Amino acid sequence: MKDYNRYLFLVLHNTRSVSRDAAKELRSLGIRILAHYGDVAIEGLASEKQVESARRSGMISAAVKGVFARANMEKLKTEEERRVITLWNSRF
Image (cartoon, rainbow, N blue to C red; front, side, top):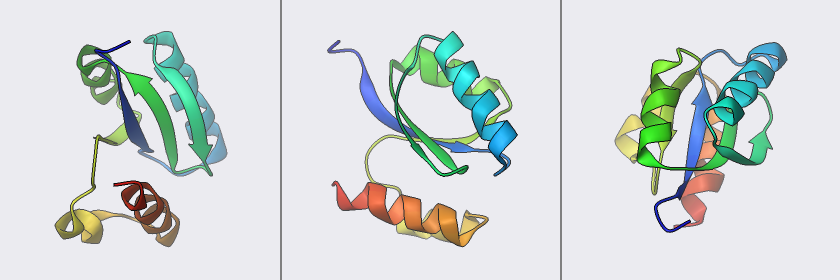
């Protein structure tokens, strides 16, 4: 598993059905789902190749590995996304 890292996948559209479909898509790519953060984000264990496939799926707005840059916080759509990213960043 050394080629796998934790990623936070931000769901493109923050609805329950899209979040559920995004999780299903990530699983189909072989990504191990570790946690769901409301309808806005999914944490998963993935390889770089899987992350690239997830980005191309059209269901993910971003895949974050490590600290999410503060400069990008203004690009987030909702307060819930900002809370999740703040929680994610606190790990690092």
